Figure (cartoon, rainbow, N blue to C red):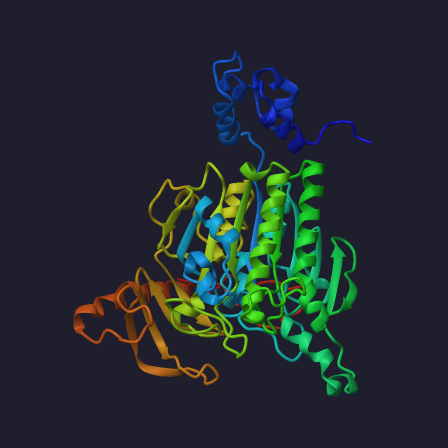
Amino acid sequence: MKTQQPINRNCHALRLSSKPEKQLTRRALLRCGISMTAVFAIGITGVSSLAQTERVLARSPQASKPNVVFILMDNLGYGEVGCYGGGVTRGAPTPRIDKLATEGTRLTNFNVEAQCTPSRSALMTGRFAIRSGTHSVPIGGGLDGLTQWEVTIAETLSAAGYATAAHGKWHLGSDQTRLPNAQGFDEWYGIPRTTDEALWPADPAARAAGVRFEQIMEGRKGEKSRDVVVYDLEQRRLIDAEITRRTIDFMKRSVTAGKPFYAFVPFTLVHFPTLPNPKFAGKTGFGDFPDALAEMDSNVGEILDAIDAMSIRENTIVVFTSDNGPEAIWPWQGSSGPWRGYYFTHMEGSLRAPFIIRWPGRIPAGRVSNEIVHEVDTYTTFAKIAGAQIPQDRPIDGMDQTDFLLGKSEKSSREGFPVFVADRLEGVKWRNWKIVFYDEQRDWWTPPTKLGSPKAFNLITDPKEEYPQTGLQSSWIAGPAIKVMVDFEHSLKKYPPIAPGTPDPYTPRSVVDDK
Ligand SMILES: [Ca+2]
């Protein structure tokens, strides 16, 4: 047994002491990852206050790597959370998430891919999913998900010394060789695919047909994942509470082990069937969906409370976001707030997700920004913050947003991005404009129709994308927007995309000469 105090616990002792000078032994500081240079900077002779000490501890380049808790809701529309105009208007206040927003920075133009699988692929790899064979939700079986060749954020941060875990929905490969514990995570628990399959066990015809129902699974790196229980409607109600419990347990174990951690928390709410935990059923009086929103807020609050209880708040980055736009299916349809459209479309309601990020003392509190950020940027930014190596042998679409998020720059590193829905390039976003090559149908079920000529929308003056700019005065937008598209298509030509269903081992063809 090691007798040494765990690092984080020791830092906690430092913070709580009423006489910090006496507690600042060299050994204690070294356990906190602080060099003696930093000790002199602190002013150990008693000049500095405890507050100053904490600031230096937090800002020292030698300070330990920050933990990352990445909370990803499933199909949570832009307009559901209180601080995004939802909350009570959707039948359920969200005080914990709203408070998190006041403690951190809130983005109003954070963009995601249009479906579950491509969105998660983009988060994991920092690459637009069109590159990775994951541009669409896999339907009907077959080899799905990411090839082993892709380098996930879990692999990237593991190489930088992080403990990593995924608790929740994966949807990036249901084969043993493609589950989270085979893609860089030290451990995982959850469902390999998606929550609508929880409806199947209730269908006698599915049982009679011998359908293999989706399992809740768990696994550790280097081992095969095992089935825990069939994911049915009962388990659907229970799983997010278990995700919360296991996430907190993982964080505690990581803190005890003195390792920085990356906790990926892809909750299953509010994907249909949107059914709350029994503890929340009937809580709001407005039905299952608002009850599920109340559960979501409570689960997030439990994780935040655990962070505080472990005294790791200052050194833990918390993200709250969603993988894509709202559900379109009654009675579980969601709200896209001021935007129009549901997921699986190129509309702003599909692309813009809530995004809150807290890192006390580092990321400005209470800041709200409408700068364009894309979810691929989170890969690059967290790799940078963790001091991890980003692969150099492939295009990484994520841009480093560290300076923007830390408040050193008012501007995002990104001005735009290509908008793919499945394998269709349906549009381009650039600054406050969007150019689209397809017309979206108000009926969510009908595929979009290709336009003879693109339409441009000013997203500031026309948030619901109802009035295309037909005047020649705005035609200049085509220049910069088309450049975003041309640059990306050039990259796809140079680095041909991986086809969906590509088996392992995948080896990229040699780079196509772009001369
Ligand atoms: Ca989703």
